[in-house]
Image 1 (cartoon, rainbow, N blue to C red):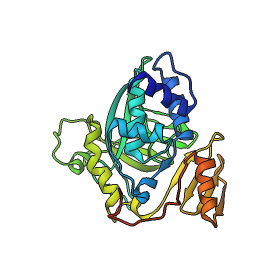
Image 2 (cartoon, rainbow, N blue to C red; image 1 turned 120 degrees about the vertical axis):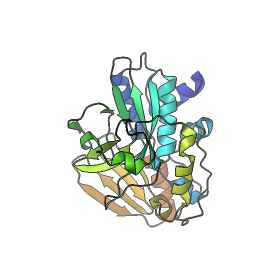
Image 3 (cartoon, helix red, strand yellow; image 1 turned 30 degrees about the vertical axis):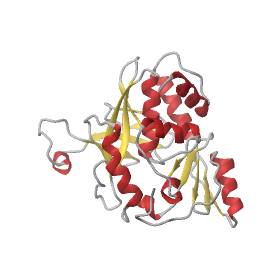
Length: 279
């Protein structure tokens, strides 16, 4: 990223250019990213191509003022953090399913971030409902966040076997737990952006991917709650967990919510296209 791209990204987030890559700056950047850049899978159902290259990600997130799913959001956010002087490592994870099963390899991308004032942090702006602030990577106790209580714990002796083919001396994988429920299993091996291309392709084409089965557009609100548009259902969840739902009747209403509540300008309403039809 050059300085012009960095400045444009920071304007998108509504923050000033930081003097130093500190943990306080990282906390502000992550929260503002969650508040301004939606988690959304609209490209899957609009027939738009998803390319995991830095320029293409910046064109979408900054130039077109869109959102994306994990590979796009954490990919672009990691590029911004690196340009600001943070030490950024891309990490792969497998999402825990409702029945306890693990997702595909490269199921999720997240970031390990080092700051000048010490420590390593798990930064994630691409998992939907997750922590509002970075989590201390090496801490193993409870970490209280506005979104819930988190823990990062050793995944156990079976983790290497689940990964397959790793040296037994390699550090065990980690489970990221939210309110007592494992969210995803995190590898510690550094990855490159291109490593996630197969995972992104699977998620936008497979009938087993939840991204091909439904529409979602969601972001954190300035009050600490969340707004989500799922198809034509608009949900407003307050910081205390209370929720209101509204069914939108017309295309004009749907496009207005995308525009006014998520900052996304669309010329047509996306509809679920089904597996195998993603861009």
